[in-house]
Length: 228
Image 1 (cartoon, rainbow, N blue to C red):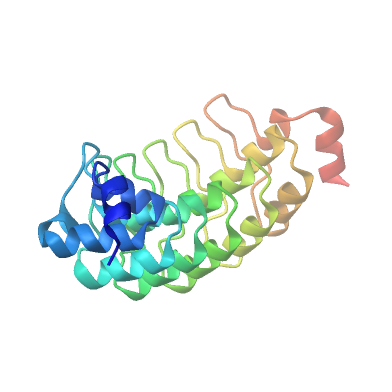
Image 2 (spheres, rainbow, N blue to C red):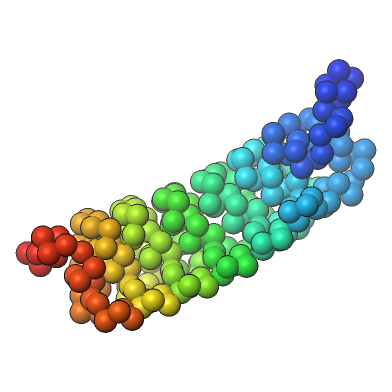
């Protein structure tokens, strides 16, 4: 429990704000006073667990999971605590949520998975965890991009290696613009990633909707370096 001075200082903060701060004593106090607060949503549709996960407050996440079993609660954009933790890079929180039943294939309103966010934000440890739990590695979002697309363009080499090693990976998936991961790697001139994709069998002649192959998205010098 918290003392009176702490209580007075925190009394105007919502349980969601306290969860964001990671103040486990204050959160416990409020929820023990009113058990319904553990599943109460704020203006964004988030429960305290969302906010605790967003900042990687592992102990608080564990305590909240013990009070509220809705580990897959959606906010107004269909983000779950796992989606948030995966995007933010909180590896231990991701493990804890999955161990408590979090859906690794949950999608946001834009069709984006925890794996896509982890790949996009360059969190290889989280990508590895999700892959080990049978995640849908080729899941496309609303614009047709896969986790491999989102890792290739920024040049997230370690993430690309993990994805390419996954069972059933589709190297040549095309988004709504017809671009493959190799298109994006070439456009951004990510040499190491482009070479990894080519070694994995990426089609160098695959055309996008502009009728351009990956080598036509980069400089001639860069294209020559990949042909050598």
